[in-house]
Image (cartoon, rainbow, N blue to C red; front, side, top):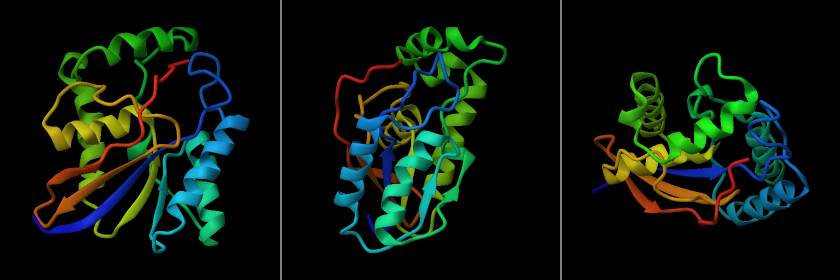
Length: 188
């Protein structure tokens, strides 16, 4: 396999609020510390495009590496955003829905969610330059699943601010170069 593109998928730092209380929280103090440490580790790489989910916790995580590289702007890409919750579900019920969804497969969730997964994979495998993407737990797991041929929503319990590396070959096929650091991921 000839690697054409290497993509660094960074899970955002720890959010200041739970998924059931704030639709778009920023980072808390620990999340900022995590983001700074990850930026330090990635700063040894050559400059490359930085892409972020539009959600605040990803943009704030990306800002640390952007500042380190004195690189602006960070491109915002909705295709690497958080998995959408079902239409009309109250904010307070999102965590329960997500916990149930995480125990299953993309196919179990149906076309809206397989389309979400496929959009993430198409975007990442369509990149033509090495890129750092600041994204979310489920979206990064979608890429891991594409690399492994695994339909589960959760394959790796990726820690906040961990880095998963995916290589894309000349035919657009992804392979997992490294899975990010894992932890007991708390969905809150």
